[in-house]
Length: 385
Image: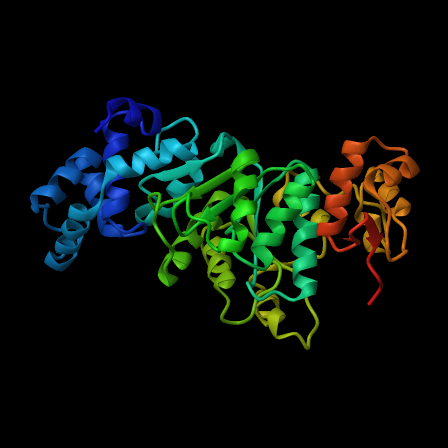
């Protein structure tokens, strides 16, 4: 093993051992956590290699045989090479950037994390909220997720989600459109674009935020892995917002994890006729309510922010969706024509009296939140339904 690669990506032998264990023991395995707690990562790795582990840890012969089978096939050097190639690194408990809130998961806490991006994860998660919901989200749910992601990012909050289609992707896009920071917690390697159509989104997140996974590079997702990673999403943040979810949505798994960890749990209401809002309504109507009803970023910040934060909203609240927009966004929106051909960004910038970079960033935000559409020749107002 190239010691220089280990030093850059994982630090000492303990970090390298945890990286090796991530490819041998499935994340979330409490028996693996107990083994590391007993012997340390290097001792645990050596015990697995030898096939001799202490008793009383819940490690059956079948489980140990499975670990050893994986160990024979796992190429840590190859994974470290891939990590270095894409700018990845290893983060372990005790490192300066390790989010200590993950330790609250006790025996299901991650042994380590694979990170792609330059941000300090611990600092980014100190002021963060997770936004989750259905993959098959309705236009209503996608718009709410994008708006919430953008508004939270504009207020200096890190938006955490799972990178999936639907609500997750829109929350990430909203945060990026507002020039904010977002973290995607994946059920696969940080170099694997899953879903494939989010390859561009993941590249942008890696450039400005963080891609995070417990699985080594080149790992592909499985159905159980999505549920396992949900505990990390819940533990990283101050609270979780469920935007839209059916009764069997995986987002409700994240919600229950957040509630069990004592995090703030919030849900957006939807039409009573909408199947995709049944999960949210079930959280809200339970006795006592499992989640707090929220309708905008101010509601969310009032829940998860410091005492008094989010309480300075105007009495009576906004009467139109555009009232949530910042002054520059409102100016740009007023300058966007309703004509089918639209107008180019430079013309809109001149009309709104803002510089071109500001106009472009606000146009992207307004498109992500459903106010405008892009045409072949520029931008136009989205026709009212």
